[in-house]
Image (cartoon, rainbow, N blue to C red; front, side, top):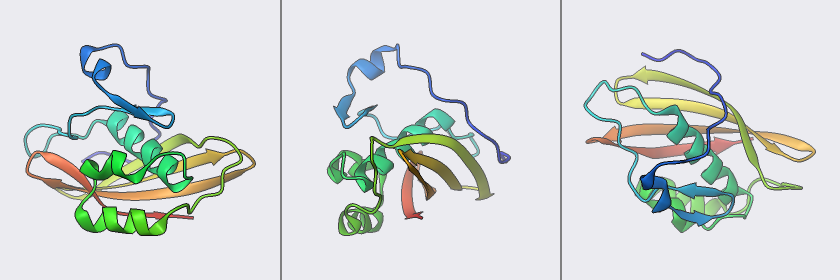
Length: 142
């Protein structure tokens, strides 16, 4: 079970997979689903940070919601499109420290500090394993 901790900033992609990524906003998302192997496999914190960054960009109006649709459950995606622009940002958002915990096997709860210029926000995300793929089932921001 992973502990709570700060994740270092992601390094720029250098592999072939990221050359096939699509870009909307400041972040290129891989076209592959978020898969972390067999049950019990630890999540890839870099992918979690990328997801948090993409959601922050959607919530500031700098990214279209459909660019993250395959990473959310249908209900979470409906909530995201209904929420619209929830975060005010004087400049593009930047996800800083990410803290993560696993309250039970197959579920991850994380929070991230989102820097938006003069004001910071917090973004909380819950993911659940669906087969080998992790999907965002809920999010909240303040």
